[in-house]
Image 1 (cartoon, rainbow over the protein chains, first blue to last red):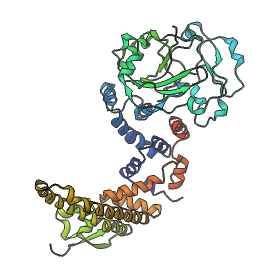
Image 2: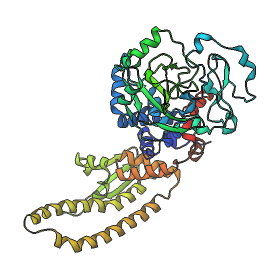
Image 3: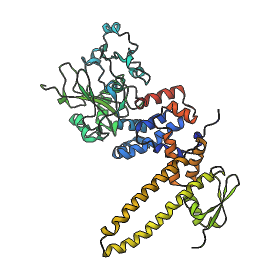
Image 4: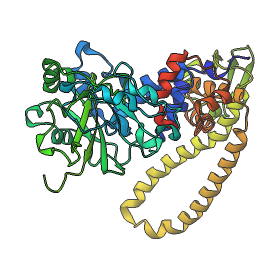
Length: 298
Length: 188
């Protein structure tokens, strides 16, 4: 096969072409999958410049606080860019985790009674050793998501029988304005953590109207996560991670901020035990979560 | 002014071309070289082939008039300033504006048609043109060619993009799985 002329183009010419495709974020994401050269250019130049353009203050906070004066934010530019425009999806916002034993599971341990009642679906997950994310790659069709089975401490439990659209479960372009603010982050955290710098997307985030209730999925980032009080609390308290991978970077596990008591207590629970707000943070400080409407009578 | 000066240029494969100065001035690179005093001798273009150079010159010739009319406008502005001081502009400009608008529209239309014909080229020529426009610093040509290339990418899947441009997928299977997973949201 003759060598392609495209591979001979200099980087600045290729970037000129890529710049013409800036209007639709999906263009660059698809280009990143073409070959390693394009992937490098999209990550290191296109997405970086886009972040500098759209969220300059967050970028400067991230870079000034990063240890070792790294020129890249924790988790990389790809993750930061994705976080600025993508909804984590119901799965990685933790909505599909069974909630009846929310917060208590780690103390009580697994319940073997449930092990044999797993669905025939090929999407049954193994105990925490295998991250659930591997079952939801881009090739998964809607038909295979009849039930998402996730271990949640006490045992296997089937979160939803009803078929969900693939799109709402996985990451997708968020609805609403693509903006992150610290003010919104402060509304989430318990008061003693307000000194931490957490940026969250504007209210209401990406709205998902589900059978049970409406979920307002949000994403965000701590700009100095390893220097934050949330981190110290998680670390000192030796909180264990859950096998829910980050929606934005390659972290395979995250911490549950609700059960670590980092979120405002006033939010409380619904009658069925589901928390009004939930949030998960990864080692790089990326946050995925979901608001629900507060129950009328708390 | 004296009769238009002719500039001699030599492409990387040794061919020489004689082109009016006003035409080559469309290239910022050549313009700078001439202003630096290289205009009297032969200007070497090591990164441009004799194959693509005529195509570039064709663009430059078409767009010399842009530069000329820009010069005229800047001269015209100075005259306008004097007028402002005494009489109101309204009455004097109403009629010429309509005529100018129609003329402008026709010009833009004609230019679009010319560009469509000009850009009806195969991939190899397109890439050579992109490289030449980049080296010679001809912004309008670079943007036009970049848009053409972008139009061949827009809306396509990675597989289709590879096929269009005959690009090899050089990811390892693990790398590819990861990049596809990271970007799955773009494949709705």
